[in-house]
Amino acid sequence: MKKSRQKPVVFETEVRQCFQFLVDDYGMPEPTYTEDLFPVVWYERPDLLVSVSWEQVPRDSAGIVVSADLLIPDRHCRADLPDLVEAAVFAPRHKVPWESYGAEVVRRTLEHNAMWLRRLMPLLLGPDREELVRKANDRPLDRAGNPKRRPPGIHWRYA
View 1 (cartoon, rainbow, N blue to C red):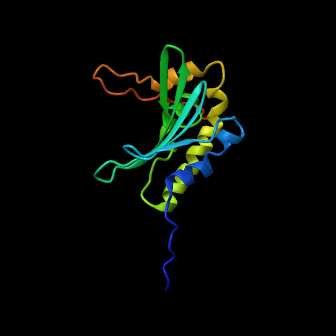
View 2 (view 1 turned 180 degrees about the vertical axis):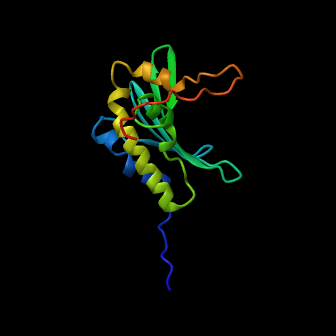
């Protein structure tokens, strides 16, 4: 029986294919690619910076990280995609994949991350975008210093 060979993942190419909607629909220029510490693809417009990175950490804890930075004069507001998805009440943060342990998994993770970002873009460019990022970074703690559980009965938009 023949084994099927997967095509190698070229991170920049895969990201460009999945996140092309940022260029086509939102007028962002073609992305910038760097590989200083780890591979990162940057999409930038005057009010928003989106980064897609493949962070490879020793001991099998590598993953895809998508984040959004609001470019506001005198302030810098940043949030990761899973936190933004939960803050927008789209779905719990664990529904946003990050795995990167094989070519197909990397492609699928990038596709899912692009889907979530596509849904978030109107909010990230809207009037309440600072509030969304603030909520995404809000980590309430209980008396013991542990993260509080989210309240029960949340009606997720895309659960």
